Length: 337
Image (cartoon, rainbow, N blue to C red; front, side):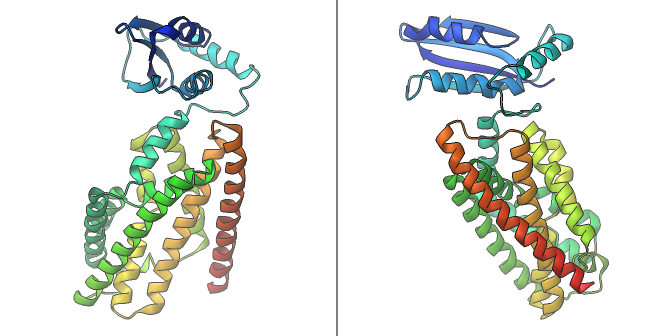
């Protein structure tokens, strides 16, 4: 059972009101202390899936108050350990309450998910370095026909988080996050393509090497794999399980097909390069489409009702675009077969 420690810092004049609100919610334990003559702090130990409800309640009860701040901490362990039967009883009671329209299924809160994904979509010098290094690693692995080296590039996976950010932005109708993710994705793609083409011009390539051939032979099984792995990736992020995401990075690799396309294009092997690029596009479409579907299924919604309407429109547009592209990809695969 994943736990979080939620800390609320607020003006001391609201102490009684905040305490009453927190004690009305299901939690393992709540503490309140007065920090000074102006501020007080309440700490709540609770299950991960309960955090979003409480943060939303506080935000709605005390809107636009700069003195309020909510801080969320992961909990490694607590002694004594929570009673699993009591935990199940709380979940059952909550499921029967009116107003709990959106299922959470053990996921992290909206804010925690947003911060994690947005951080991964940040265009920084570290991101650019990771893109460059992973491109070099993937290219060397493809040129040497070395699976282990290619897996190393897959695990680095600098393109996964920006694409997950695009999916989350579509789910929430967040144009700012979408713009950030598109910019970061675009810069990463340009670097990968240019660097891999330059390496293709300079280094001998065996187009019949197994690891290159496997990224130019596209079938329906590639689409199925990308859809399943994309769903697993979004699920891992909503659960806050970074270790599970590593396996997804390997399963639905975005980087190696694009690097293979650049290497082959550098040698003038246009048809093979287009096939590898096609595999990259299939993986990208699948990650975004299944990401949106998984986030929606897990109950990721904007807090405010007017934001929810905007999010519905954005999600409909995004799903229509991605589904259309996926159908087109399936048709192309069938025609090529």
